[in-house]
Image (tube, rainbow, N blue to C red; front, side):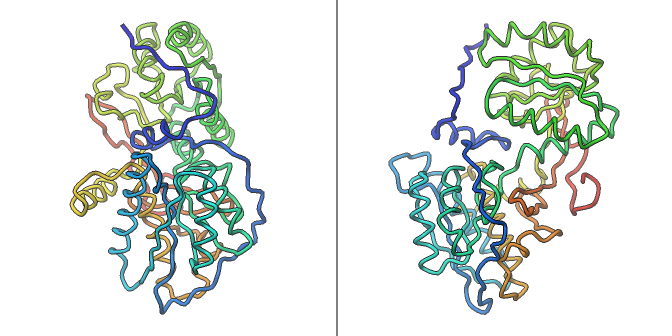
Length: 398
């Protein structure tokens, strides 16, 4: 018997987000309004002969043990990155936000008043929004750990992997490999609808064709009831690839079991997941997921980071800790050039990008990012990389 599915609330709670952060590389932090700040901030000038003051805003300082653990993991990763810098001195200053927007606003103002030239963090979208607004008039840029493009722009850049980035990579690969007739299946939630829209945008900008889409409510009864209709629509559409926005922690585990049982075989119609379908690890043994494609960061680089982190701190990093490392790596690479304007918007958005714990990435003028992703397939209960992550922008995979 299938376990009961919980129907998500319209807004995702912070405690749930912290659990999801450790499980998924594709997630949606609570939505909020666009900053609508002018895109003219240049960033303060720096003296590259001295240690550059960098403020790290983390969700510590509250009674929430999960948030405090996340804060420590982010700080650890940032300090690990600093130890890897060659010829660059970073004065890392830690500010606890208690995981709230008001705490982030206060911390950002204090950090800049005390001389911070750039802000790294915070995690949650509403907190990043508040921090960005608070220091926009000072011309200080914010590299937030969120993956929510709604808060990107002006002086705020997001480091989290976005749905658009994932969708672009998967749609391009599907189209190039004869699976360009795409059907989208999504649950009715904010996160899954945003993922659906990202797929739609990616298809419209490619040689692929969107041949259909359908949605279902996020409850066990609704998923079961939706399966025959999904099968019928996919077959009648002529689709050769079905994109799923659900992860295994949601409806995908049910869909991967029920769809093949009802005649939609993954050996005939390619299953493509917007989420990391290898999480949790036991999902790899599910028959209905065999052959499924999904995107992931460069596994070799990520495994190397995790091993180094564990050796240094005696525990595994929380999933998004690598974003703190990436932020320091980008700052260090720019400062090393010896330019007083190394932390300006123009410098942060250089086309060649940076190399982080998950591979190459670059920041865009609109505050979002682009990351080099690999395409993986679940095969014989294992993850097999079938198209490696690109090592430079403009090459294969972009």
